[in-house]
Length: 63
Image 1: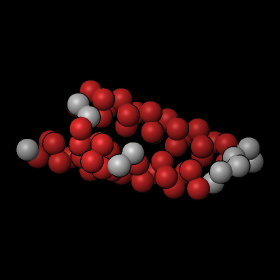
Image 2 (image 1 turned 90 degrees about the horizontal axis):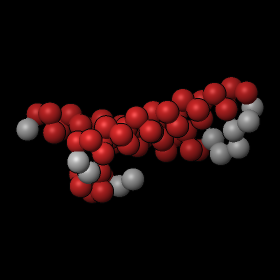
Image 3 (image 1 turned 60 degrees about the horizontal axis):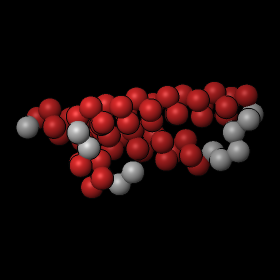
């Protein structure tokens, strides 16, 4: 998700999206450990998306 789209989310949507991304990241890491993961690049994408969401969350808290 692009940063501009993240800025449009409400606080509730932001929290829900952050939770979903963290869960997906956990599941991807588990799949990698068991040898079931085919698209390893997705781990990087999810990690960066979590960072974008956390950055926006922190920016909103400072306002």
